[in-house]
Length: 176
Image (cartoon, rainbow, N blue to C red):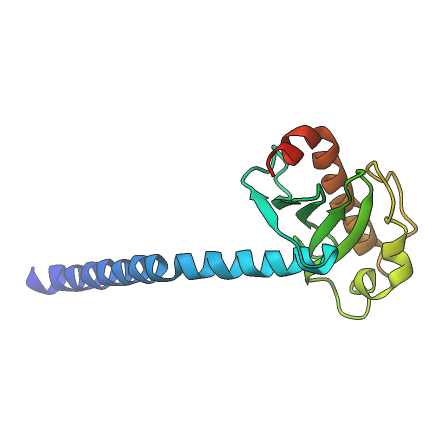
């Protein structure tokens, strides 16, 4: 009987110790990871608007694809959106919206699309420029040949940012 129970006890003990170590390491590093994410986000906001102070809004207003929203002291808004392109959640962008509600810039936080094909949404400036100045979610975009899914993913990401901004403008700008 002892030969049958002992392996179960040893395996249970190993699992409990492993779980405790995972919890300990998570608790030890979670604040540093959050700080690094916030610093990276702030650098992306500065890439869009230049050096500025921004306030992070802790709400995605019911849009699951919206990761973060920040508002600068002069009324500009940066919305981080993650969308599917060819890769699931392969497009992670920061959409800059000026104080007049027009899209003023796009910065890539990360891009998990196919190098040389889907990455063209980042590399071809004329593709990104078609979004500059819009005030509403785009219905259609001039897709890049060979990167249709990535082009549609960018349209969805920009549309999500514009929708959340237009639907919640007062709440977003009131959060500064």
